[in-house]
Length: 182
Length: 182
Image 1: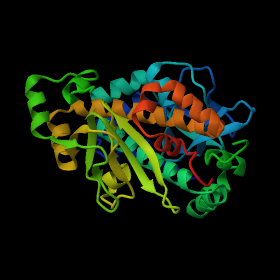
Image 2: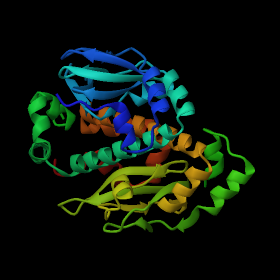
Image 3: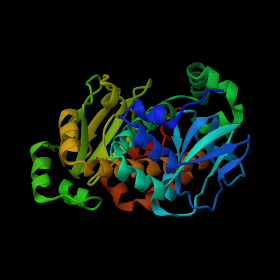
């Protein structure tokens, strides 16, 4: 199973010396999840940023028809969180669940604040990560606003053939906003 | 017309002393737009971040049926850019256009790099701005994945009654992904 170390990922964007690597390790936690295990459940405050070292997570909510609507995936090398809950300390509307065996690095808000104070270039790292996240979101919105359901699914399968083999199709379909009753 | 100074906006999130305010002014540009003026046109590289001091911008693309699909709005106090083009220096697929008379602060990549080096807390500011942007995006996706066209439009009109009066309904409809042929 592919695995991406957080320190190595950070060093693709900004410098990190051995002392800083130790601080990073000290102020983050590891979680090992089996398929279907939850990192976050609806009603809990999402007070952490989650980095996927290996495996895959999805963030979903349950709609009025009790359908699970996936709004985001995160495979190895991606960050995921419920930003509304994280910023406002509100109970989350979402579940974050492993779609396969996964190893996660958890950075809670307190440790995040400590780390960006002690390793200031981490802010530049997170800046670039979020710019990439926003770029991906804009592209997804562009496709969702201009393609039929069939075209969307075809493009996704063609663009991410390996990913399609890793997660159930129903999750992909809901992620593309083409599940159900609209 | 409501107007939000960039320095005041930044000071809601991080400190900024008078010398830093001067640097900010020195390394940013102003643009005054009339309704329908463009800040960016398809094919140009989007090398800047745009802050709306007053007025309103929209970012849109033209789909295969020649319909203008708005994927984002930015009113006073919001930042907008084509992140894919900004990060990768690629020609943009989008137009960024004023939907009403607007005053814009332009931060090109070069000046952005200078400013985050000389005023490091700007990175913390942009981090918080992007977290808020990602939170709004997640919420929009949640609604788009679980509501009918009619419910979406009703919720938007109820949530943002003043905004609805400022922009043509067809732009709102395309922003909600409920225009056209899907």
